Image (cartoon, rainbow, N blue to C red; front, side, top):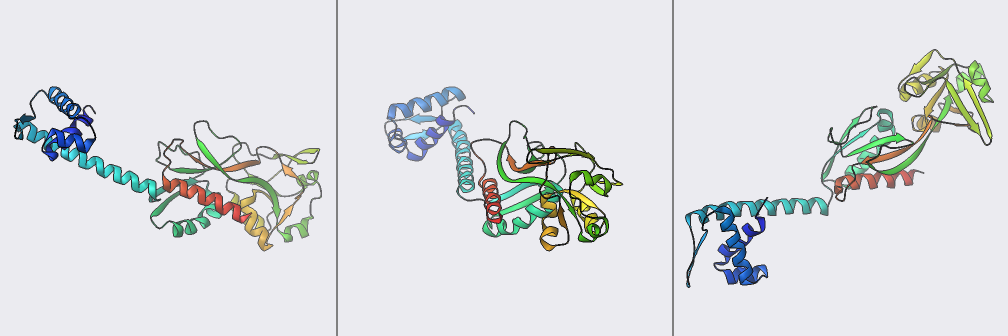
Length: 299
């Protein structure tokens, strides 16, 4: 918007009841103040002040312009105060999105601690198994599991993620425990049935690489559902480590072939992704820092 500085100077002249007093308040010369008011008058096409040796009076136009400029400056101060409060302490609503199961088992349990630490912040969490457009959907922070992130985004690494094989002790007691990846085709294998995931698995141990094709009667697009089938003695499930962690810790399932690692696409890194820029809101920064902090404490 044009002439903002001139408008502010004009208001100061009126409030100070003179050019010299306004110049002292603004730390300008009297001539500089006079020139700015003259520019504003030329821009508006009318006289704002009537100056005499003893007084300074506003014209009819000057009265209206003074009132409008005063409101403008008051609004500007409110905006400045609001921006200062946001930069000084985290507050407001953080809109977050995450993959469904990861959000349930990893992210959601961390939120009560975050909300307790920052009482002026609220969280709006949306769990979806798709890539969310941060700008179009008004999202502050997205949790993504990927090897490579889309360009144009800023990110903080939260934790690595790997896939593993899990089975219930009862299933293994009945069907036997695989000792090598080539034993897997003889078992009831359950895996994610979408995208790049499939029934041909590449496993590695040191310098050895083995590729096997496993047959299955169950493909499931949700790792929590796979774990439910595994715990019901339904077979050997290929799941991300965060999905199996609680069941492994409780002894409800055991890891199969733990010395073998899966190759692509069964690996990745968990990132906190946000729009780049010099003014990341404190509420978003606080949540990112908290997630990084709690991940380190949990290792």
